[in-house]
Length: 235
Image 1 (cartoon, rainbow, N blue to C red):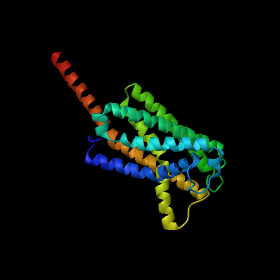
Image 2 (cartoon, one colour):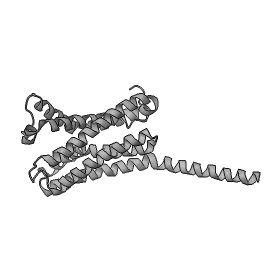
Image 3 (cartoon, rainbow, N blue to C red):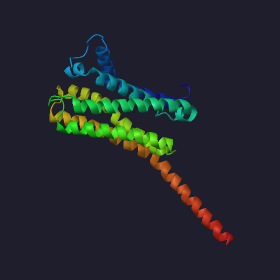
Image 4 (cartoon, rainbow, N blue to C red):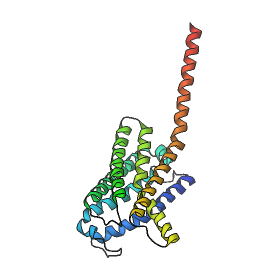
């Protein structure tokens, strides 16, 4: 990890801190389900189907924490083997998180105050989208389309980090308004957090990939013009 720059260490720490709130809560629930002390409020859904929550918590933790390392350019350049190993761990964690999240959305009976039709539909769509993006990212990297791979992983990571944004903004909401949103308001709040993440992902994609792509296109056009000039000169 000594290969990281000061800016990359800062980025890594910020992402890990951002992921820590839902990850910490999930680990407490995980410890409870495997026989540890009960710290969080009771959850009948967790008691009825503990394995789906254990898989979801474990997968989400792997995806968010291991995925944070994939944002570090020095890691990709100087430790490509480690980057690939962590990438495989990230994909496995993401697949577990998305598939278990889809299963829980469709099989658990949530009260209306916690999940209405809007949130139900959004969770299904985003779980399927995350699975598709991870699969597409794997196909892309195996066929040498590294830009497509990176873009797909960023979008999948934005979906997977929805709980982090929801936890952070949820605490802020309670601090400002003094109550937790419920019903349709909660649906809108949860969906809004995912929208923010996806907008941030698109901004990152444009920042890191649009300009190089445009530069590569300009370089290709310049080479074509040079070839045309040489052809005319030789003619």
